[in-house]
Image (tube, rainbow, N blue to C red):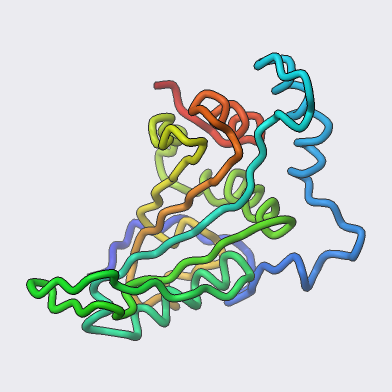
Length: 208
């Protein structure tokens, strides 16, 4: 049964896709890219004592991943999840497949069990901006994201419980409620560098 604890609706039109490639002029520069150049870069250089601007860590890509083991029994769930990721990012997802067979789950090697999207460049910056400014504040009782989900190699993974966090997704249009992992891959070498970078870009970390 679907949960009724869906986030409040936005005024955006039904099924509207967000794609910077279709709405942005050729000379458009994402707000977060400007923010990085004008404020984040000098702040990071001062905070960590970098001597060269090229030493300052950057967000290289963002990966959205939806794993759906139940799709083995119902492929329509996977199709629905793929459509939702495309609505959220404006980019077509790719299938992820089982790396090995698990008899107890009736899972065969190579069977599609999820979808993912990898964002780079302007599309990545636009998605991150909307995530911070629009999607995360829609979570009920939101008090910030965990500061403990870094992997020690400059990457951070944010887990969302519902795709309904994004205003592009409408409750009446989904096949099931599912979560997703959003991984920020940066060029930072340490957790503190990666956290500072993401925080300067607006990621709302809660106090640890």
